[in-house]
Image (tube, rainbow, N blue to C red):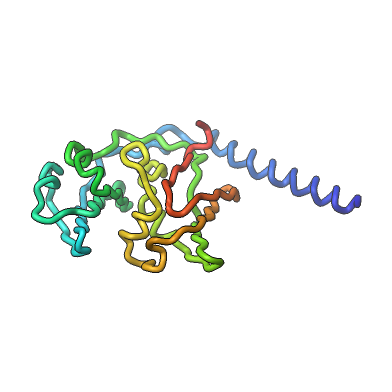
Length: 203
């Protein structure tokens, strides 16, 4: 019994120590270190997935108004861009094409990123006791603010999976998703469903 109390106490102190250590890193960061400027933002290309699953890649874009005038119905329009040479992607489904047509690039002004940001480290879909690791497909859409562009458009797990074309067995099925973050916390979501992410621990 005393051994269990001792182990619980040690575990609790270790957890608190690691959290306090993470918070103290703020003192060693300057404002400039935490600022990502949009001066280095580059629009790489637009990836259009049509309803018939054919794709078109378009470069050298000035705006997105033309997206409403394509010859075939669009399923997804995925913008691929980079900031400080780091690549980002944002996905618009067919219901959000009108919103896309009104956007201007770059999408963000200078971004101030505090050190204590929650990031997805692993995402696994469970369907009938079978595991599917979708981590790479999901984190591609994290964006420079690590909020999965939730301030621009909603993210749905099944649309990201469908767009990736890597998991045909995850189409038209139901299950759950377990997500582990960089602080050791676990998050459970329904699949299919919307992905909401509280990235800033200081909010």
